Amino acid sequence: MAETVEINQLDTRYERYRLVSPAAEKVLLCSIRTYGIRDPLQGVDIKDCHVLLDGFKRYRCAKSLHIHSVPYRVIGSDEATGILALIRNSNAQSLTIIEQAQLISELRDVYKLTNSDIAAQLEKSPSWVSMRIGLLQEMSDTVAEKILKGEFPAYSYMYTLRQFIRMNGISRADIDKFVNAVSGKHLSIRDIELLAQGYFKGGQAIHQQIEHGNIPWSLSQLKEGERIAQQDDCIEVEQGMIRDMEVTQKYMQRTIYKSKDKRLTSASYLVQANLLAGGILRQMDVFKQTIKELYDTTREKRCN
Image 1 (cartoon, helix red, strand yellow):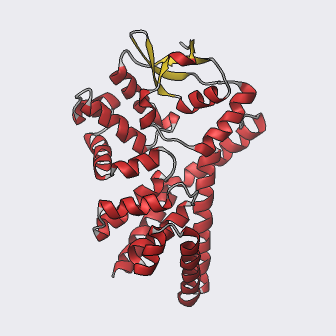
Image 2 (tube, rainbow, N blue to C red):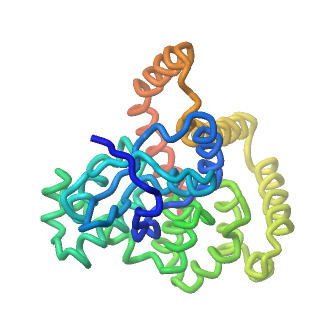
Image 3 (cartoon, rainbow, N blue to C red):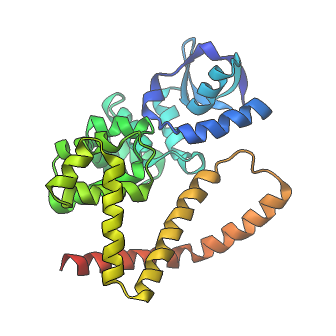
């Protein structure tokens, strides 16, 4: 059951483990200004202190709007059980894999839970827990900080930079230099991928330009080179497939972001969105398998 607490009574020690998203926070700020805080913040009560575990965006918005009291719900008897409850419900609350890894590390390092203990409590496999621990262990403090501050996309680390680490033996120091160079520039996932290709595989000249922060020039050169290469090497049907995939990636990213907008509440929207979401879900398995096969096939042929 939710209660109302004074905002200055909230302990935000776990804020450093949660991802900052300025764009999402801007949308949320407008919603709270109009409708107030609809969903309770969540945490655990330790002595006379409300330790906040979830709802940091709402907390920051409330502070900005000079809201002095907020709805609050207790989700555990202590910090460990609260963290476990938060991770367990993360599918509904959109806890990212990086945030999950940070909180699991807290359970291991501070509360001395083993991987098996955590897996059992979360009803997950030990490998699910180990993968997140491994992800955090291979990531430098610099990269983790940039991701959690919202300055570098977690997606770009997971699906672009990790591939370079595994395939090309790139060092942590090189990864840190690249992340520092491109962070906070409001670049798209595609632009970061293109810059990574140039930085790690494009030769010394483009490497130095990116490292020195000359991002617009570097992107311009890389995109022009890509355009020429595509025109020279791809037949018409291949160019069409590339365009389709670029559009798919673009609208996937937009849908992920826009679906969190609290203003999407009308009856007409709910009916149409439900029908469309159902249709997409029915194709999701075959789509995922198709993309995986395409990725594996093209990677294998490219490496050969």
